[in-house]
Amino acid sequence: MIRLEKRPQASQTFSWAAPVLAVLATMVFGGLLFAALGKDPLASIETIFWQPLFGDFAFYYRPQLLIKGAPLVLIAIGLSLGFKAGIWNIGAEGQYIMGAIFGAATGLAFYPTESFLIFPLMILAGALGGWIWAMIPALLKVKFGTNEILVSLMLVYVAEQFLASMALGLLKNPEGFGFPGSRNLQQYGSAHNAELITGSGMHWGVVAALIAVIFAYMLLARHRLGFAIRVTGEAPRAAKFSGVNPTRLVLFCMGMSGLLAGLAGMFEVAGPSGQITIDFNVGYGFTAIIVAFLGRLHPIGILLAGGLMALTYIGGDIAQSQLGLPAAAIQVFQGMLLFFLLAFDLFTNYRLRLGRAEAA
Image 1 (cartoon, helix red, strand yellow):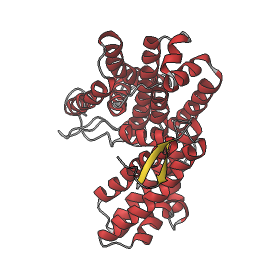
Image 2: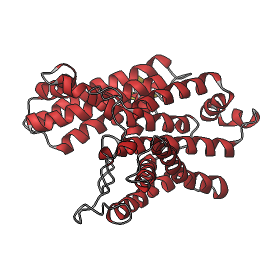
Image 3: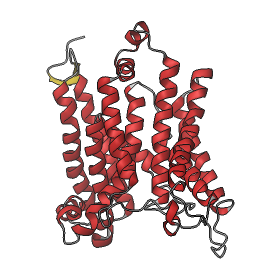
């Protein structure tokens, strides 16, 4: 019989090997999925992972890695702080939306005034919007003991309805001939998150993501608060005896994840997206959960995982246009990453044993 046997201690080697094995397994089973859809599996995998980097139009697709990867890394860094402490913010998508709304509303409030102060104010407003939305489940948890998973997740749908109301109401472009959506911030210089180097894909959101990676690394490796986060997640009882304040930790982790998600939304609406629309959000807040765990909740790992997930976004778009793969198949392919990561993670704490069943 095959049985699972708990390891005396978690395998660090397998912990870091699991993401690599998950990616390889996703390629294999993703190829089988594409074959079942009547597509060449090798050509599909090659299109997703090779074409954006080394294909004929790689010069166009490579900057997109920064554009797609920046919000994923920024949100995942914030989520990882809470996940490490056992605080589960699943509502980053809602915080991302609220950051975009707050940021866009601030910029549009000054339209058509041109000033170098407008964009910094939008950054502050975007961070505030995400932080406020994350504080709702945080305060409910510390005051009433509610489940932050359910509350933060349900608030995503509230944020989506708020987004629709803004696109159709207060932020609707008065010169848009009745179409839903705000003014295009790309055409409003003071509110535009433009590329810092033309054609590179590098904008202020990318810079913020890199700063967040450095900040998280220093926090977790050098700061007392980082120690409190790690010990709370690894040994909750020991954290109580070491004087960790659980209320303060919940508020910090939830607030920081909301703040970074809000920033990601603001940089996106002021740059690549350009405007508030009903379908502005594309699931970055949920995909960032995969990025956080694929990166082992480590800042450097998250940076690499964000690049990999951005690659699947861009390669998936190419596969849809060139090979005719359905969008749903690409989404399933991306979801496989988390599925196989969780499956291989099991073997971090358990090992397979073969043997006969013991007699009753």
